[in-house]
Length: 54
Image (cartoon, rainbow, N blue to C red):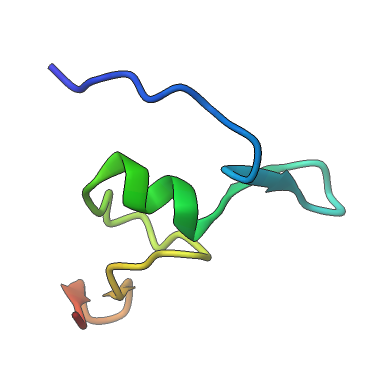
């Protein structure tokens, strides 16, 4: 079971289109890569190669 991480200030921002975009801070707090090609992925996941660069 995955643990629930409370959302804090600086964990996300709203894009001009109104979507919630999680920041690198949130991804590091979560502790793993979801392999979805997130905009601010600190783990270096590449959706074209399906590999992490780091």
